[in-house]
Image 1 (cartoon, rainbow over the protein chains, first blue to last red):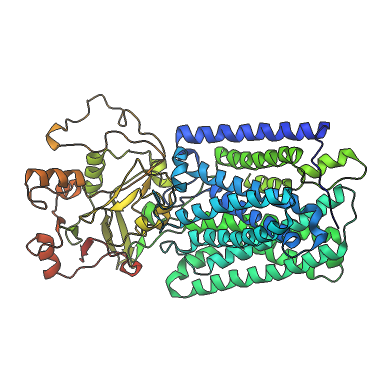
Image 2: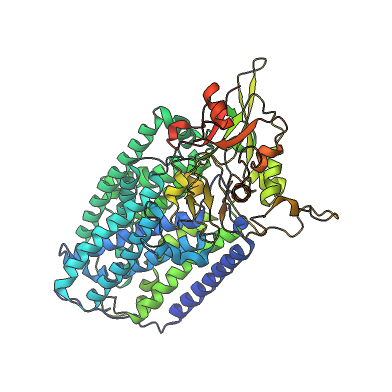
Length: 412
Length: 228
């Protein structure tokens, strides 16, 4: 079956309102960035104990969602599942927008953002033993590959699309494992160092990606007045269960291995310390317990609404997994010397989450939403709509909104 | 080629923090408010930590002065994406501010916490005192007259002193030493060439038991400690 695609009309009041709101939020984010650039990173919460803050949380979160979106598209273009075709173009476009957002997040977290280009002087000015430099290659390549892939999809070059799809999905896997390696290969931070981290990140990316796929496809199909094929959503739900279980096993293994001697104290801090409620309630609770309970439940598991809620919980919960890794994960003090280190050098780091940082994060989400809905107006990415022009514009802004709203709400 | 190293005698160290202040003065390291100190956003190229063990009345408190360890196998150099931090031929790990992009990966990777991010621009008059800045013309070149926020900085073993001394043909470790060694009132610190069997550091390491911090990290530091 051949689907034709159309661009968003974008003439309604709601569309212009959405553009205006997102533009204002983006400007607010730019202002926050300007403040941090002029005043220095003292306006952020980061310190010499916790070097990274919300922008890095956002970066790894957006990369995960981006990889998930690409995998959605591969279902159609690589594995030939035509059912997903109506939202496949949106998914690839979303992946490009999200990786763009991730790179913006990394850029604004740099102390000297104007030297961002140095990350892309591959093999020439870069030290290629650094995971950051390797990830520069991976992210840059991913961005280019996704754009080429999208261009071929837009041009409907069937023979090339499948090859590009395979390349893009493999590259997405690499990108996410590389992101995990940024944390997993740092021997000095006891809560981070782990050979499992790349795989844990990959599992988290696939989990959040499948969950985002369910959220986006249900919203898109529903708001465009199409029938949701329950079998598709249920099969995706079963996939989600599998990925949640894999993720849970990896998290469990990570914590268990860390509980043995060398990293024991830091892991106890992570599991029972001051910030452990983020782990138990927001990470395990939202990502593992609640969605599994809903999806495995005999009656709820068949309800579309409950499945939607479960997927949304996963999308939100993965954000807190990232948050918990980046910020409280770095807070535990290092043991420079045996014994109990007194004073500030032995104290658990603290992270005052300030307005500039939150504004900056909201601004990044708003920028992504803006790029997304403006892009939909000029690209033929949407399946043709039968009747109502009003709903068309709604569906355009929905796919990117769930992560945006949830993340910004929690940041406050 | 010489391989500069430092030996710190913990038996002599009194924890007076003279090294910390001398370092700040020598290298123009910005000062911070007490709040910034508690938040750990104030840069210290040299810090003195206090490690306590035991319970009253059997308490032991040790003062550990911690400059940059100038590891032979530095994790910060491994992770720097921009080649901004590198090991010089003489083993000193230095930071190039012009190349540093401020990604803070090295802060995350350093097992000794010696790397500092510059969180704000230095104030013109830090002390708010009426007297003029000290005259430094007798001390040779001053490598860091001004610095910008947004880059990472660290201890350099006062390489400007070493380079200047070598040019003048002075003996490093005797005539020329880093500011912290010069300032130590109890002579707890010794600086010199680890590869030279005649140097005082080699003599100290050969005659007394020594250890390095966090040797299990595999970083092979060039700062040695003589235990109490």
